[in-house]
Image (cartoon, rainbow, N blue to C red; front, side, top):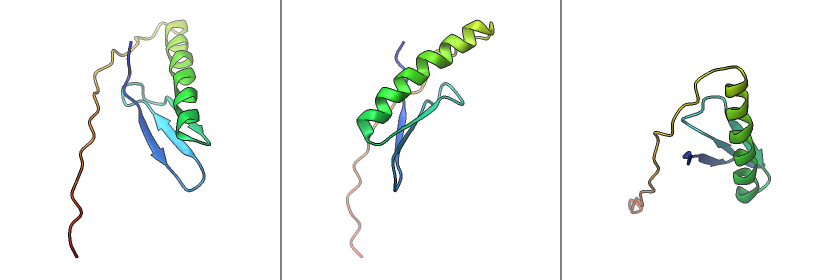
Length: 73
């Protein structure tokens, strides 16, 4: 399965979460580390859902990046 993730930069690190898996979050010192950590978190999250006989949500979210031209001020 391929889940979309969101990565947010903060003053001290990067945080990542999975919109299709509420509560599945991770952080890292770099964007690459946050991606590695959220990959581990997704596997752990799905394992936990299965252990508790809860449904595993199918990936539904997609991503896109939109470039917005700077507005002259």
